[in-house]
Image (cartoon, rainbow, N blue to C red; front, side):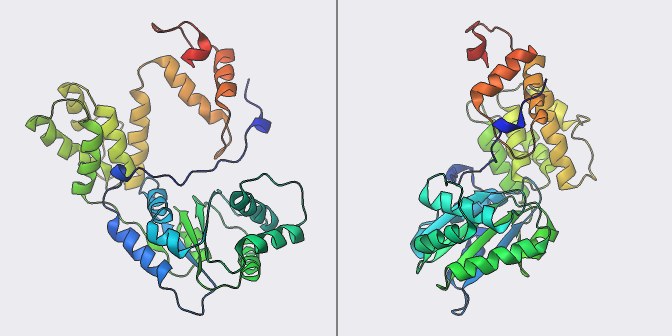
Length: 320
């Protein structure tokens, strides 16, 4: 018994970032800001893609820029959207208008939506972030969207910031993408340490083991964060198990993306109960990049028999 797709609206990431979790991306942020704040005077709208492997920190960099005080002062209007692929232009414009007005739109024609966007954006410099764009196909959709935006607002200096893990998408939207490179092991160690040593004792032996474990992260901050969280408050022998070649992470010749997948799989393997693993695996029933209501999900878990009473409560809704 699977969930109904009708209860699943399109996912939107948020633009909030925890500053303490950001490590090793100062140079990337500075370079992208430089492009955004110092465009040629004749440019109405520029597009800057941020491209990198999954887990490299693209969304985090975009969030830092989106919330930067200089950026806020420079761009009067800012819009954050998360879309896996290009929509036809009317749908894109609807989402922009809903974000700007913070209201759900009634069904309206493209012409009316364009006029309302002109009211919102006319004479104002704006920043649009398109987070996690996977596909621009056909590219005519992208160019139609850009042409419409340029017609809506002829004020110079507007910017679209796109994050994507696909080189093809980056090259489709701009000629000069910004590529996020892997972090240094020192930066990954800093992320790992924040997660692994929050409460427990930090011994020289664990630090030595941790530095070697960090080499498995292949420069990906998400991998360092996941491994650090996985090993928090764990015994030394569990650190040793990872270090000595847990089959899920072993493989010196793995690419960064391959290592990340193995590390994420390992974090699933270490979930504390079979029931929790079933609850997590159930997410595979849902379409990619969709979200659901919490209470609906809990009811579905209950119907599948995934939930069990715990010491704190026997009420299944509370367990969920």
